[in-house]
Image (cartoon, rainbow, N blue to C red; front, side, top):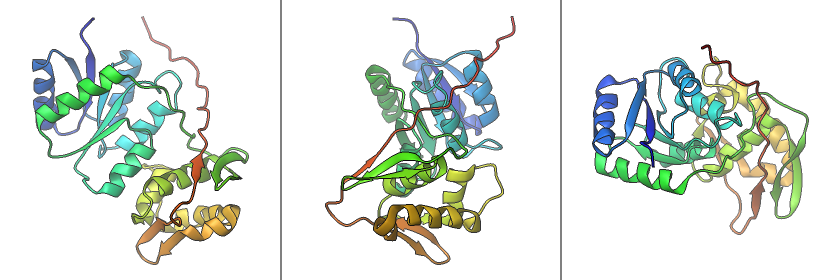
Length: 244
């Protein structure tokens, strides 16, 4: 079996260096990218076997990189482990909802990181389609206790994020950046109309999306509720051109 290539996406050079050194000692070949833009370019240049992705990056955020890679059929099956200083459980659930295959909060031991990398590479990843950044016509997106509801792509991503973090408060601005785009100048006032539209489409279940004024939103379904979220087919993208 050939040497596995790990792409480390980390804007702190000291962290990137120590993580790369630890993985190299385990026999992995490591490539580094210091920003989201550089990471996307590197993936197109040389497809890695696994990506370690810092969530907080300058410019294009880790969330946006994750959304881009998991929404592209050509890269959706690359295993991605999120590395972040955000240790809150709600943040972890949101990261997993966006498509991360594993999530490790800083600080972490190199031994633990290497074990998670080895386990994920051994297991492999099945491509999991993710909704696009824009809206599309309504189609079946979620079933609640057997009843189907049609949602747009943004509404689908919103309910997926809320359900994944069920019982945990998500700040309005944070939720807006997840659903509408990390690099957009968005806040609570921008996500509110989408939340209202989602509530209206879900009927009585819409009342489970609770707004904590001045803080954010929390999804609280009654115990025993059966929720099934449908997967969306990723948008097809033209093949990348690699200059010779």
